[in-house]
Image (cartoon, rainbow, N blue to C red):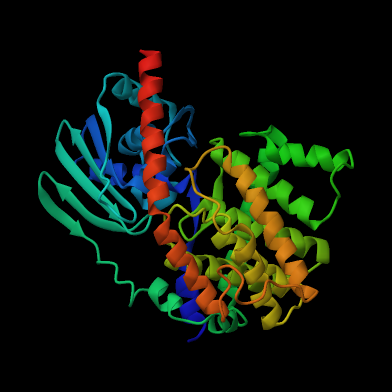
Amino acid sequence: MDTTFIHRIIVEEVSLALGCTEPAAVALAASLASEAVKGEVLSVDVILDPNTFKNASAVHMPKALEYVGPEIAAVLGALGGDPKLRLQVLKHVRSKHLKAAKELLEGGSVRIGLDPKKKGLWIQARVKTTRGKGEAIIAGYHSHIHRIKKNGKVIYRGETSRPLTDVRGKLARLTLSEIYGLTRHLDRRDTEFLLEGLNVNLAIAQEGILKRSGLGVGAFFKEQIRKKILADDIISEAKMLIAGAADARMGGLDMPVMATAGSGNQGIVVTLAIGAVARKHGCTKAKTAQALALGHLLTSYVKFFTGRLSALCGCTIAAGIGASAGVVTLLGGSFRQLEWAIQNVIGDITGIICDGAKQGCSLKLSTAAESAIRAALMAMEGINIPAGEGIIDTTIDRTIRNLSRISEAMREVDRKFIEILNERKILCHNTSA
């Protein structure tokens, strides 16, 4: 395999996203359905898989900060979305679209349904306009268009995702050693793109801290460092930046992030943990890009086994693994030390649940940052959780695959959370009625 293969992975798995990627995917599906028929939007109906429903339910939206949930994402996508922008679909939404969206929402013309039988990402949007009915389905990955219909007739059918032959499947069949080897030879375009992604995420982090967006966790860390309550070290800086970016994103700040493996928060953890260490140690651009490439690839690799969306928090375990490996690379560690760092992360934070995208994610992301960097620093000193303890297996590849079994076993956790979410929505609806 050569630089062409790693370029394909980076193109597929690392991309700009505006707002949380699940609502963005909902908006994308609705925009595709609306574009298929044109005309004035009369109603929007969307069916979601449980995990997309979970992740879209409580996060604030760019362009409409006072709203949360898939309803606002769907209607804004139908009214003003630009599907050519993929996960930045709402970039050109204006006040006129928000006004029309409010009218449709208040009139009960936007409906969200849940299909509990769907596994993996599934979004089916139906938009009725003055010129007919459009339908679009996104499945498997956040911007993978499965099918588009115009007045009942299929006008587009995407390629069926084949895990054994697509670029993600090919990545998953590699060993960790092979993936590590891939990242040692990046071409110029990928180096520049990865460094641009770091700068994009640094920008939203700094803005989130300045504006005390979301829960204000990034700003909190900055203040604790200023007061010398927290040390001014690489772990504190990484936690501050990562929390600030998550605060901004989950709070609906109208700025893009560079996402990885379908998640902006995963992209934030990988890029900013690595970026903080690179800045503190004065690493070269080439070394930083290599570390970023490894971080992104390993995040995607882990997500292939745990599932694109699951009960395991990918922003901690998958991105934490990617970030720790990247940090070892920056510090000049050996491949063995890289394995140790990953084992330390897996033994530390496996089991943190995903209870939906929301402002509180900034806390989990800062936890992931600390775990990832600490795991790498410990590995550099020869400290690692040995094989045979917990889910740490005889090889690093078997250990990573064990995460798939844990994720599968936690499906009941997802079902229980959806129950809680639905009960709360019913209670809130009755309270406000």
